[in-house]
Image (cartoon, rainbow, N blue to C red; front, side, top):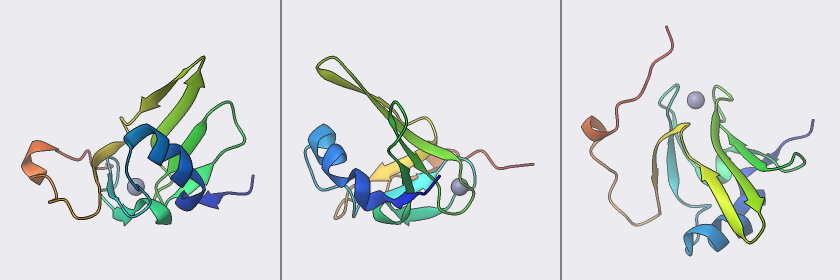
Length: 99
Ligand SMILES: [Zn+2]
């Protein structure tokens, strides 16, 4: 399946979060890689939109539209920080490391 970059989810994310999110920094909850949302891989052809880590391909975010609302699963991320905001204290967001 051809993957797109995170810019392909820009409109959807702006609708959900209310701000520009392609310049936000996400941290993968699996490998700890921090990257711009624009640099992630996006898959839009399934029943929902899926964002994957550009390093380890771990699922970072899943968005499914159900009737008139979006269901957003962010369990794959350790953090998601919009541009211009301070990064969270990493001690508050422990990252699981692969064995
Ligand atoms: Zn990763």
